[in-house]
Length: 303
Image 1 (spheres, rainbow, N blue to C red):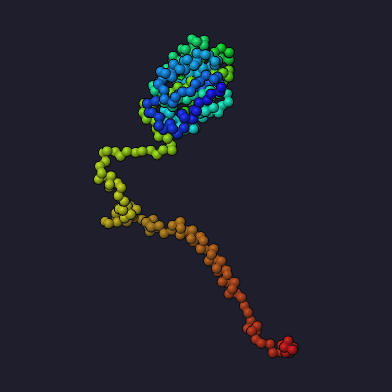
Image 2 (cartoon, rainbow, N blue to C red):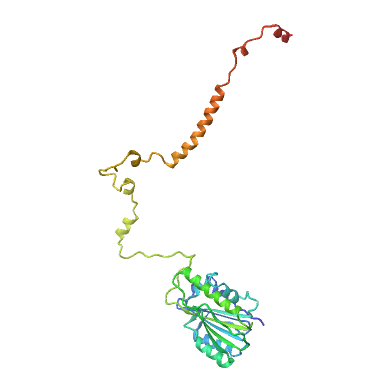
């Protein structure tokens, strides 16, 4: 029966409650070989369980990934490791079993896992250094175990997400170049020595320097009213002020942008008003137009 564990437990918001001295673990395979695993497990017990599972040699390629200096919180960001998330959560149809452990106490013994695969499955060891950005995989049907070591992550949250994305892309490229479709990936991590940096969605918390006393802090929070009484040369309006030497137009600003725009609008309005008044004033009506007609024509109209 096809088994897929709920890997979202290791990649969801519940990661915020993980221990700071532990690190996550991921494992996925194209074969059905992974039983359910608790979310908190000692590294020694997890190592023994992995060695026992891999003794069946169901895969042609075994990739042992080591990512130092991470925390479960680093994988909370969905942009950090999208390819790993897709495979662990079962979105890749080629993956038939996957498991994740949110908190692994201490470090998984990857060297013991590599030795076990070499001895029991007759796999050849291939070491890949991700820092060089290049690797070569022979196109042959023989089993192999690939030891992939990633460098530690930087300190900043955004930098850590970018670096995890880079490592995730490198691992995805390695899987695409495998000459066989039967593989198993053991993704191990080591804990950070410090607490994980806050994510972008969480506000940073700043602490007040103890060198500042309460009175100094109170002075910093008071509204600075003296700045409104200062002139352009930096002197206070309360004392004697010496004006800057120079012409009148250099000491004072008579034309501001608002005044300039107002003049530009007022000029065409005055022109329109002038044309209208001139047009009305140019109308001429003769005085005879108001006189009553007394001739024969007017008498005829009356009939």
